[in-house]
Length: 100
Image (cartoon, rainbow, N blue to C red; front, side, top):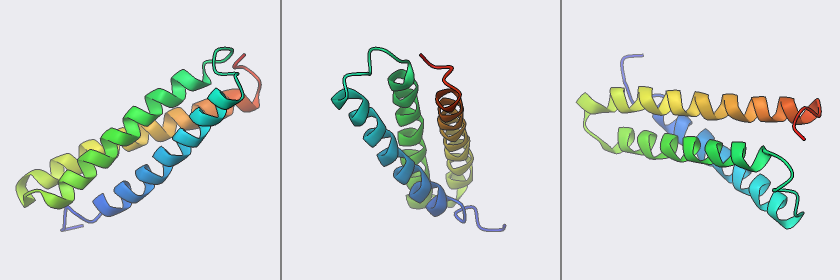
């Protein structure tokens, strides 16, 4: 990939969608009054911060100079992967009833 801005639109799109999903999960936990009984809301909040950082960095990569865009894109990619991994671990723990 010669162009450093190839991944940034995809990272921005996917991280913003997963950010919305995290907000839905967090709101559902609050409405059902079960947020104090599990650690899912804390894990989801961390995922929200990771996806928001990924959104901001990928947006700055698209709008920024060519010189800095590759570095911002790589950092956004790492934040996105961390948020995705956290959501996967949360779903895995939840599905096996490990999170109480």
